[in-house]
Length: 106
Length: 123
Image 1 (cartoon, one colour):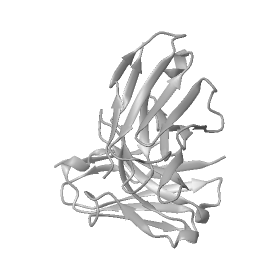
Image 2 (image 1 turned 45 degrees about the horizontal axis):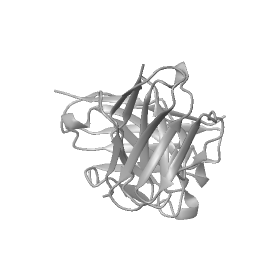
Image 3 (image 1 turned 180 degrees about the vertical axis):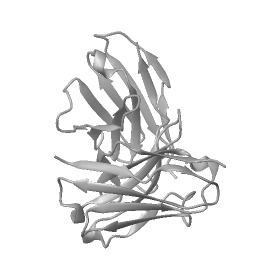
Image 4 (image 1 turned 135 degrees about the vertical axis):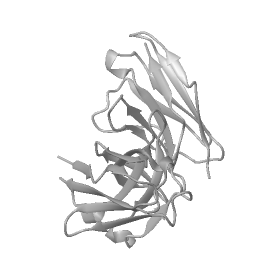
């Protein structure tokens, strides 16, 4: 199975900050990576797929980059609504695997 | 509007079985893969398995730890996906989500999710 490792596990930031979350795969997954946002008590919400393609309706302050084994999710200017947990998911092969999550807190 | 609504969760005893349903609307169900995930309290997301759409033969994939115990099926006439869980144990306690899959070359990512249904396994 492909292991996905996110860092950091917790990130403290303020409104207006630029933040970056990293996701590393245990082997190359090309660009087959998605990012999700999950708020407490809610289902995950797709933000980005194919490493850098923004899902329709997602604010442009979110961006993704990377290929192979290292990927990043960047939020250019944090808004109050962005404080949540973020997960990366590889879909290069089965089984689908996720990072352990990064909790973004105030 | 795409909607997915899970149902069938609840309290069940270890060793028993449970069937979850995912009722969908707002898209052409037969054309899409459907997947199940779970999230134990305070934990991360765990993929359970997936059933492909009709174009891909409605074949299934499962996480190794659940293969043989869990079965995913679908009824294209009703736009419903199912997750049958057998031989439940306490480690199966989680919020179970269904979601719609978008295909890549081999695997899928997931664009619409239900709100989840809670399964608690306890004696």
